Amino acid sequence: MTSEIIATKPEIVRLQEVVNKLLTTSRKLKVLEAGCGSATEIKLPNDSYFVGVDISAKQLDRNTVAQEKILGDIQTYPLPKNDFDVILCFYLLEHLPQPQLALQNFLQAIKEDGIIVLALPNVLSIWGLITKFTPHWFHVWVYRNIFGEKRAGTDDFGPFQTFSRFSTSPKDIQQFALSHGLSIEYVDLYENFRQTGMREKFGFWWTILAGAIKILSFGKVATDNTDYILVLKK
Ligand SMILES: C[S@@+](CC[C@H](N)C(=O)[O-])C[C@H]1O[C@@H](n2cnc3c(N)ncnc32)[C@H](O)[C@@H]1O
Image 1 (cartoon, rainbow, N blue to C red):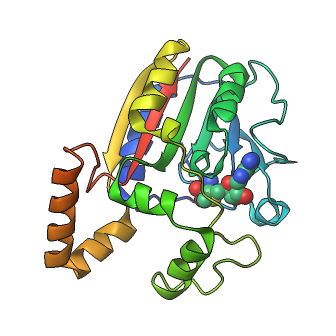
Image 2 (image 1 turned 30 degrees about the horizontal axis):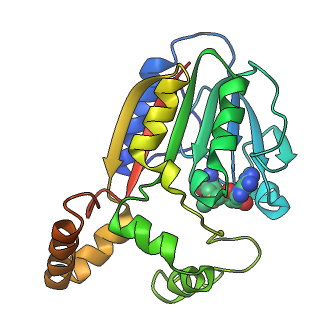
């Protein structure tokens, strides 16, 4: 295992251990990174062959990992059948109007024994619901003025248009996986670093808001687990 990527986010460190254990084959891996953007989060063997698919030419240009770059919509692009050992899909599904089409595409493109790694926001969290029900211009404003990302909203640097369909909830995606013959190898629900920062900043007021939302939603809306990672196996 190797490459220059050094995981610093705790959820990625945990995921890396799981992936290392699951990838025991010595053959060269063919990896699809769906909605690859400019970055890859986890380490895979150096000789892996990376195919990156993204709908943004600018994002593809910035990607220095993919050996093969495909400009296309993952919901409709005809991925080859039974072709990939690993499919990585980090923070893409929330940006798709029809995420189930992407999942179907992954299902037919992954090899027997291959693994699919999904990382995405938990739509059934305070964070997820606020993102879902606020307009794109507001997201751009928050990225620029609260998160300090001056390039936000320009040159395909994100944030990207968000749909966050309810079908992407942790429960729904796991049901989809099981009903399509995939096994669930790993589930990790966690709080993203942005919410951690805000929670620490607004301590008292956050506790009041979170408590009220928990009560009003009968515990159905998560206050802490903003995001999740799933590892599925065919
Ligand atoms: C939030 S970024 C995530 C990028 C990268 N996976 C990461 O974790 O840093 C979302 C990416 O998905 C791409 N994207 C959005 N809609 C897409 C679609 N329909 N098909 C393929 N890529 C898409 C965007 O261009 C962007 O690069």
